[in-house]
Length: 103
Figure 1 (cartoon, rainbow, N blue to C red):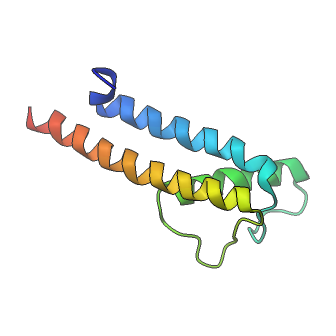
Figure 2 (cartoon, one colour):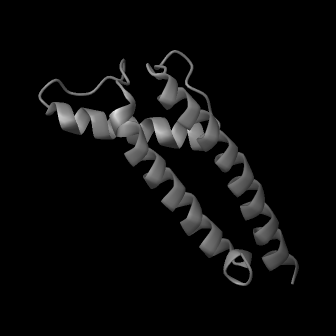
Protein backbone atom coordinates (compact mmCIF):
# COMPACT_ATOMS: atom_id res chain seq x y z
CA UNK A 1 0.00 0.00 0.00
CA UNK A 2 2.98 2.26 0.34
CA UNK A 3 2.52 5.70 1.81
CA UNK A 4 -1.27 5.65 1.33
CA UNK A 5 -1.83 2.76 3.75
CA UNK A 6 0.22 4.13 6.62
CA UNK A 7 -2.23 6.83 7.69
CA UNK A 8 -5.00 5.66 10.06
CA UNK A 9 -7.49 7.91 8.26
CA UNK A 10 -6.78 6.20 4.94
CA UNK A 11 -7.15 2.76 6.48
CA UNK A 12 -10.49 3.82 8.03
CA UNK A 13 -11.66 5.01 4.60
CA UNK A 14 -10.63 1.64 3.15
CA UNK A 15 -12.67 -0.10 5.86
CA UNK A 16 -15.76 1.92 4.97
CA UNK A 17 -15.28 1.19 1.26
CA UNK A 18 -15.07 -2.55 1.96
CA UNK A 19 -18.29 -2.48 4.02
CA UNK A 20 -20.14 -0.57 1.28
CA UNK A 21 -18.87 -2.87 -1.49
CA UNK A 22 -19.86 -6.01 0.39
CA UNK A 23 -23.27 -4.47 1.15
CA UNK A 24 -23.80 -4.07 -2.58
CA UNK A 25 -22.62 -7.62 -3.23
CA UNK A 26 -25.06 -9.02 -0.66
CA UNK A 27 -28.11 -7.55 -2.40
CA UNK A 28 -28.48 -10.23 -5.11
CA UNK A 29 -27.35 -13.07 -2.84
CA UNK A 30 -30.68 -13.89 -1.28
CA UNK A 31 -32.85 -12.83 1.56
CA UNK A 32 -31.81 -11.76 5.01
CA UNK A 33 -34.80 -12.01 7.30
CA UNK A 34 -35.85 -11.45 10.91
CA UNK A 35 -34.77 -7.85 11.37
CA UNK A 36 -37.53 -5.77 12.92
CA UNK A 37 -38.23 -2.88 10.59
CA UNK A 38 -41.42 -0.89 10.10
CA UNK A 39 -43.89 -2.72 7.86
CA UNK A 40 -44.58 0.37 5.74
CA UNK A 41 -41.06 0.45 4.25
CA UNK A 42 -40.76 -0.64 0.61
CA UNK A 43 -39.21 -4.06 0.02
CA UNK A 44 -36.10 -2.64 -1.67
CA UNK A 45 -35.34 -0.43 1.35
CA UNK A 46 -35.63 -3.38 3.69
CA UNK A 47 -33.19 -5.36 1.52
CA UNK A 48 -30.70 -2.46 1.47
CA UNK A 49 -30.90 -1.93 5.24
CA UNK A 50 -30.53 -5.67 5.85
CA UNK A 51 -27.50 -5.93 3.57
CA UNK A 52 -25.78 -2.95 5.22
CA UNK A 53 -26.50 -4.39 8.68
CA UNK A 54 -25.21 -7.81 7.64
CA UNK A 55 -22.06 -6.27 6.17
CA UNK A 56 -21.27 -4.24 9.30
CA UNK A 57 -21.87 -7.16 11.66
CA UNK A 58 -19.75 -9.48 9.50
CA UNK A 59 -16.93 -6.97 8.97
CA UNK A 60 -16.63 -6.23 12.68
CA UNK A 61 -16.83 -9.98 13.43
CA UNK A 62 -19.50 -9.33 16.06
CA UNK A 63 -21.62 -12.29 15.06
CA UNK A 64 -25.26 -12.59 14.21
CA UNK A 65 -26.69 -14.37 17.22
CA UNK A 66 -30.23 -15.28 16.29
CA UNK A 67 -30.72 -12.36 13.86
CA UNK A 68 -30.43 -14.21 10.57
CA UNK A 69 -28.19 -16.24 8.30
CA UNK A 70 -27.43 -16.04 4.62
CA UNK A 71 -29.81 -18.22 2.63
CA UNK A 72 -27.49 -18.92 -0.33
CA UNK A 73 -24.07 -20.49 -0.63
CA UNK A 74 -22.72 -17.36 -2.36
CA UNK A 75 -23.87 -15.18 0.50
CA UNK A 76 -22.15 -17.46 2.98
CA UNK A 77 -18.93 -17.43 0.96
CA UNK A 78 -19.03 -13.63 0.73
CA UNK A 79 -19.59 -13.46 4.49
CA UNK A 80 -16.46 -15.54 5.05
CA UNK A 81 -14.38 -13.30 2.82
CA UNK A 82 -15.71 -10.17 4.48
CA UNK A 83 -14.93 -11.57 7.92
CA UNK A 84 -11.34 -12.13 6.80
CA UNK A 85 -11.08 -8.61 5.36
CA UNK A 86 -12.53 -7.24 8.59
CA UNK A 87 -9.94 -8.98 10.75
CA UNK A 88 -7.12 -7.90 8.45
CA UNK A 89 -8.17 -4.26 8.13
CA UNK A 90 -8.92 -3.83 11.84
CA UNK A 91 -5.46 -5.20 12.68
CA UNK A 92 -3.91 -2.96 10.03
CA UNK A 93 -5.77 0.05 11.42
CA UNK A 94 -4.51 -0.75 14.91
CA UNK A 95 -0.90 -0.98 13.70
CA UNK A 96 -1.11 2.24 11.69
CA UNK A 97 -2.74 4.06 14.62
CA UNK A 98 -0.07 2.81 17.04
CA UNK A 99 2.68 3.93 14.65
CA UNK A 100 1.08 7.37 14.41
CA UNK A 101 0.82 7.71 18.20
CA UNK A 102 4.36 6.49 18.88
CA UNK A 103 6.04 8.88 16.42
